[in-house]
Length: 163
Ligand code: ADP
Image (cartoon, rainbow, N blue to C red; front, top):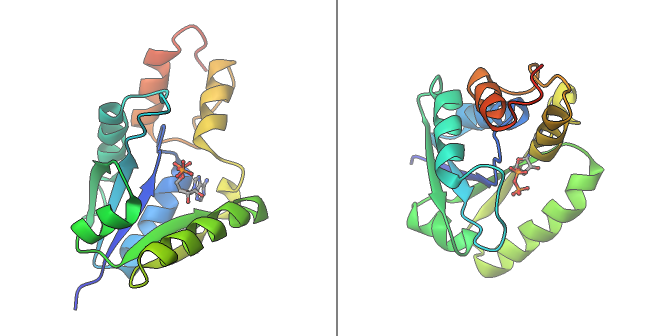
């Protein structure tokens, strides 16, 4: 039986930390769908289309990964995809509290869907999309923590401060 997993998130933008989790998940599961949440209540730094495009380009080297977007309840989307697993990444204990609560909530909503946590590489433990945007905006170097395609998009967006 083929096992499909969904790796959901904002990916605003995708970072090397996200890619690390996606690569590890792709070695474990037959198919991984990296799916970008369309959040109507929160305007992102990049549009969902831009985020999907950056994710597609950055993950093109992994054959069993697809990129998609979704809105509404995550568990409904996971069922629609015929997937049985939700992938989440853990950077630190501070992530755990929130992730644990989400996992319990999702289990309450759909008992047959498992949440699967993958621990990050220590070198990405401090990397988040928001810190990448902030550091870039103020002229700091982010080249080591985002793929080339994201770096170019950040450069277009915040062209005043190029590093
Ligand atoms: P969300 O808004 O759902 O937290 P994110 O795009 O910030 O979306 O993160 C998606 C998932 O990837 C979350 O499980 C998050 O903990 C994980 N993640 C984010 N950055 C990293 C990183 N540097 N290393 C490992 N996992 C990460």
